[in-house]
Image 1 (cartoon, helix red, strand yellow):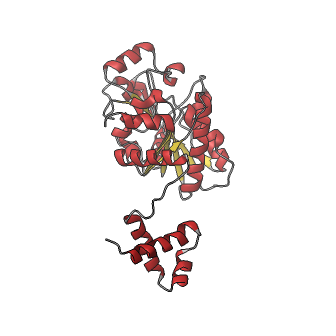
Image 2 (image 1 turned 90 degrees about the vertical axis):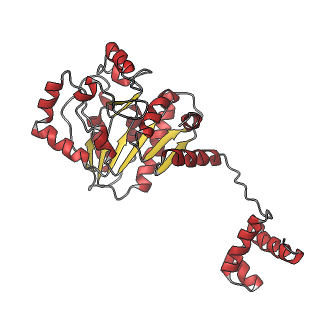
Image 3 (image 1 turned 30 degrees about the horizontal axis):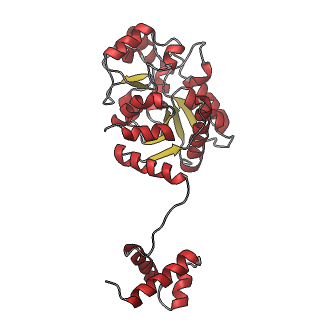
Length: 316
């Protein structure tokens, strides 16, 4: 139990610090004590309920979400982006801006970046500002050729990001998914393809999107999977894909021939990359995001607020 004199002293110190804006050093000189003593007094004022600190900013909600998701899924970092715009394309644009800024501010020492494909990653690349990082090399993590939506293929994104960074890039001259496993095996044995895949496995950082094969599937739109494939994937328990590799509810690669026809690094190889950033938007991908998190493929997640909130409503 605090005496009146002790309580008065705590209120006095707290008032100087929180109301008058004095530093701990200034308060210590004013009262004639050491700075560590003032620090202990301020903590004591909180412990006894004399001081309660409230954060008055709408950002506090997203910061709380970030902490909860980090803890639940064992992530190194989470960035929850508050977006109120109802249009998916605008949400992707904002998430792309945030992801680009995150890379610039937090990953200055990275020398090699692997990139997947998809519309959200394409927005990241579009929003990335021009800078001079000649020592950085961008490498596609998965193949990507064809005439449909070329602007979101891994090769194109690698080229565009390298141009923004004034760095260099590699090209994986092969489709993401091949018609037959035999043809796929022949292609990955070609020296040009093999060397790029070897580099892709050793990148410092990987940027990946997450897809849902059943709702607005880009893989279906560009012709990599057909309706009969989608029905087969559903029967096999697929809930999403990362770098064109399909995974189940628990994040494990599904046992389906389509996973054996992909030209790109495997999910196990992705897991071994030091930093993997998932850049995702849309509640339609919730099951897919959860599968990716359960499979421990991501280290950092950049996600919109609505999806982040619903992610926590789902039982782990």
